[in-house]
Length: 82
Image (cartoon, rainbow, N blue to C red):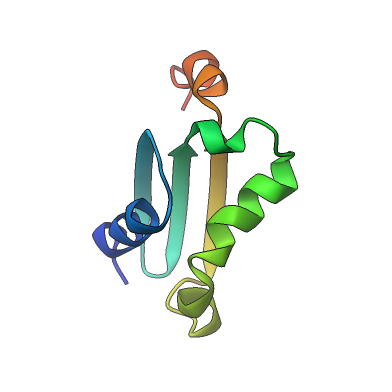
């Protein structure tokens, strides 16, 4: 599993303004920015990302995943710290 495959899968499934995927060897970090996250709590945002990577997680191709799912406003406030 590599970062480009994860990024492509998320971009195909979700309408994202920004999609950044970092990592290797089964350990990855995803930063996803979209208006779709506006009315979601943090858990629901993460569940939305997990849902599209469930096969990779189940097969252990991804064994550790950190997710930052942000609205565009949250991204503008936090992008300098990420």
